[in-house]
Length: 317
Image (cartoon, rainbow, N blue to C red; front, side, top):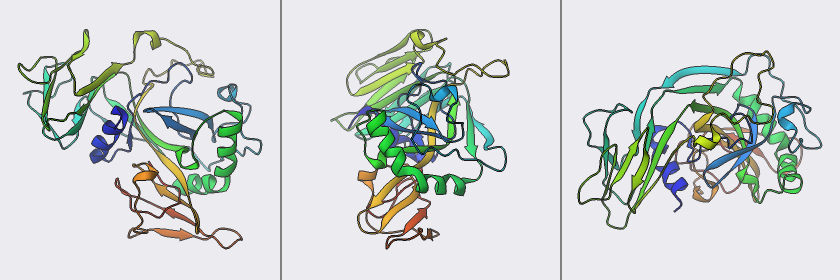
């Protein structure tokens, strides 16, 4: 599997959403925002437009918006700020922390006890944002996802499936990060952040020196110097206020659509990719919402980190 996939599945245990292997916006946009519609490509999220903004908003100047674009108008503030994720190290269940301190500025040493594992190091806290009115987001996606997909493929030139589209409803934003994905054929590998492990598979990381490592450990840190200070299109605050430098998205939450072959589309919470979904049907507590007309049905289905859903539906990250 790709490093981005190992990282995403490894950190699913944290139940914070889709762990993003490539968090920086690459200068293409200011930062991930609630209301963005986009897709993941090799671990990076690319937004196409934002359903909460006007069609003529400056952030839409690159690709425009779908021909039948309809802004999602909410009855109040869409943003709900929750407790931040503190600085430190976060890892999969297959990774053991061997160092005495979890401080992001200390020597951090880890050992991967299985074939795959993932580690995220946060020197600074990651602020959490989530959307109010989740049902309005679900209903909006069910209504418009087909035109969004046509827009992505024909106007933006994206090579994606319907199930690749994401409507963002939450994220964790930070200033800097370091990540590692363990993938080894010897079942056991070791890595350290700040110090080497003699005789083992080592990975060294420091805020000043970056990474050095051997095989079996995919790694990177950021943002890279070339992206520091880069202003994206439409990135200035309209009120002239100072911009928040937390523009690195390490966790993303939202909804996807999967159209079931015989029953019609479904909206579900998603933290796994469509090809990993089973066929066991809805989980306890799911609610069904009939669609308008036709012989199919649309369902809105909240999902766990390892979803059990039908073949074609829409789900949350």
